[in-house]
Length: 384
Image 1: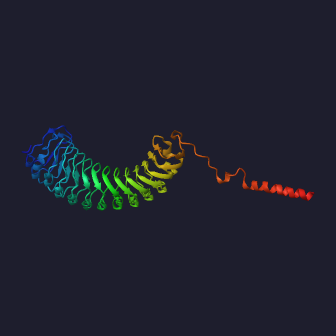
Image 2: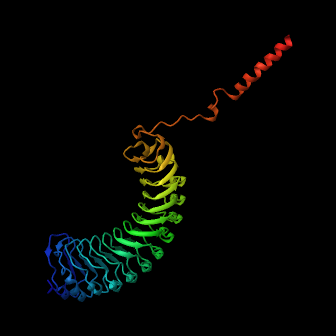
C-alpha cells in the first residue's frame, strides 16, 4: 500500500481490521487523510504508534483519525512533528498513555483535537494556547492533572471544551472568559476549587451546556449567570456553593435542564424562576433551601422535579408536576411540608381561617349583644 505514492485519501473506518499499522506509510507523501477509526488496529503494545513517526513525511496531511482501536503505548512526541497543515487529530478510545507533548503547539492549523477515554496523564501544556485556530478540544475521561493553563484564553475561537472526568486541580482561569465563541464547557468530575469566575459563567455565547458538577467550588453562584440567555443545560451540582439562588437565573429562559443539587444553598426559591418556560428537569435537592414551595413550579413544563432534603415548609401544590408521583421528590429534611397528593403521605395542612371567619359572630353582632342589655336596663328603670 505504501507503494501507491499518489494516494491522497486512505479511509477504512467501521470495519473489523486488526494488526499493526505498517511503518512505511510515510512514503505516501501526498496523503491528505488517514482514517482508521473504529477497527481493531494495534494490540495494546508499547510500539503500536511507532508508525506515526513515518507520517511526519506526509507534509499535506490534514486529517489523522485513529480513534476507537486497540492502540497502546505512550503518545509519541513525534505527534507534534506532523504536518503543519494538520486540521483534525482523533486519538480517543484507545489504550494510549503518556502526556500531551509540550510541542503540540506546533500544529498551528489544528481546529479539532480529540483524545478522549484513554489513559493520558500529565498536565495540559501551556503551549495549547498557540493553537489559535482550535475550535474543539476534547480530552475527557483521562488521568490529566495539574491546572488549566491560562493560555487557553488565547484560543478565542473555541466552541467546545470538554475536560470532564480527569484530575484537574486549582481554579478555573478567568482568561477562559476570553473565549467568547464558546458554546459548550464540560469540566465536571475533577478536583477544581475556588470561586466560579464571573467571566466564565457569564460567557453569553454558551448555548449547549455548562457542566461544572462534582468539583469543590465554593462561594455563591455569580449573578452573571443571567447572561446565559441561550443556554440549554446547566449543572453545578456536587460542589460547596453557598448563598441564595440568584434571581438572575430567571433570565436563562431557554434552560431545559438545571441541576444544583448537593450544595449548601439557602433561602427561598426566587419568584423569577417562573420565567423558565422551557424547563423540563429541575434538581435543587440536598441543599438548605427553605420557605414555601412556590405554586408556579406546577405551571412549568417540568418532567422531573427534585426538592428533597431541604427545609421547605407549608402546603405542597397540587398542579402540574406535583400530580405526578414518579416525577416528584420532596423526601428528606422537609419535615414541615403538608398536603399534596395522597401518595406523598404527608400530614394534612391545618385549616386556615380567613380574617372574616376568625370570630364565630360578626363584630356588629357582638356589639349588639353588649349594647342591647344596657338599653333594656335603662328602659326598665325609666318605666319604674
